Figure 1 (cartoon, helix red, strand yellow):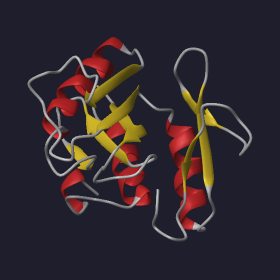
Figure 2 (cartoon, rainbow, N blue to C red):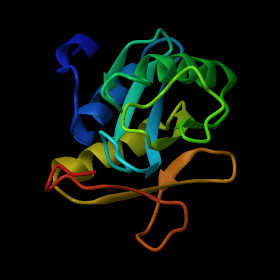
Figure 3 (tube, rainbow, N blue to C red):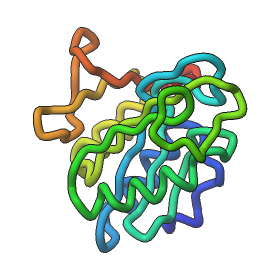
Length: 162
């Protein structure tokens, strides 16, 4: 299976995580980018996810196109550095040249080089239509979490909502 086998834009977390798992096997790995918060109107909800490979290929989307290209640039840089990255677009963003048509703000977390084991677990859970909870450890690595964990990201498969 190749990245081209995944529909673009992939919207469902399961599709994006499958693509990310495929990207993990490629040279350089990948990053997962999650919407961690929104203010005002937003195309996608908190928890929406996008995967980006070290070469800039991607699955999923975070906006109607107003930030996704820039996000890919930051994701590739995060893959190279191996460091968790937080970004804000829209109101209060340092990127004054990127405006959100909705007038709000989007906060993102870029998690470089997710663990293949964690991705396999998440994919298996979503295939079984089970909710998953993810959190970040002190080094920024994405790990399994419980519903009561602080700083958690929640992905629900059953309804297709994020």
